[in-house]
Image 1 (cartoon, rainbow, N blue to C red):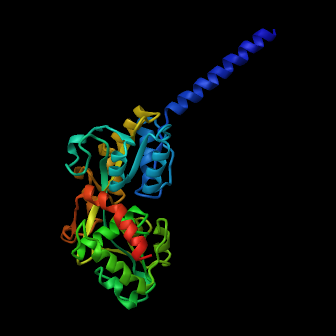
Image 2: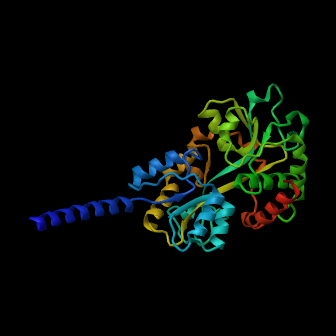
Length: 336
């Protein structure tokens, strides 16, 4: 009798184990897939529905994700990672990601992907000014980088730390380019940040979307997609401004982690982000999908006119990545 009971218990335990293993096998771990950013929440739900693969939300930023896959190189946890393009380039250089050319690879423009598939763009954003008009207390909406230095905006301008946050560094590159700098000469941007100190800027460490909506930060140097989300989804009196001197657009990219524990599932996740359905989700979240044909006419109407976007250029993203560490060191020394 004891032997029979023992056999039944062993069978039940094995069944539970196999069930758990099966469920776990249907997972893929993505670093930096926060539900409140770029509408990853909707994207993760769509991935689950289309593929059966569960991808838990993850709130790391680009820098934290790169640091994590580096620390875990000998025993990887993540399968895929999403980050700003400079971090993707660094991950490739450090041997932290592996080659994978997802479905629709040929439709990704050159310059928006690593030739071997170590990283590739899924969407992009244009940097500018996210302005809570009501929080300006009657002051005019600023229209240029120079405007932000005016005393009337003292204590009203925010930006993420350019020495540590990707969007902060994008801001520095955009300002530098607009004011005549080059990838090898960040003097114009550093002077701008030094001058800005007199205006007592707000420099949060983490995303500040909610602080703009509340009016705590009336003007934030941020992406167009966050401003459009505030306007059309949260119905706030927010305006997006592309500065008169110009700005840049930058891609966000994904990679398959080297020796990913669930590489096959990770590949399916990456495929979906570039599918018609996945790209449409990005477009409906006000991002520029890397496959522009996925953007509907209705989604396009919510962006500023193309004449405004003509002031948004691109840069050599490899050089941008190469210059990030040196800029961060100079910023920490000269501005902070």
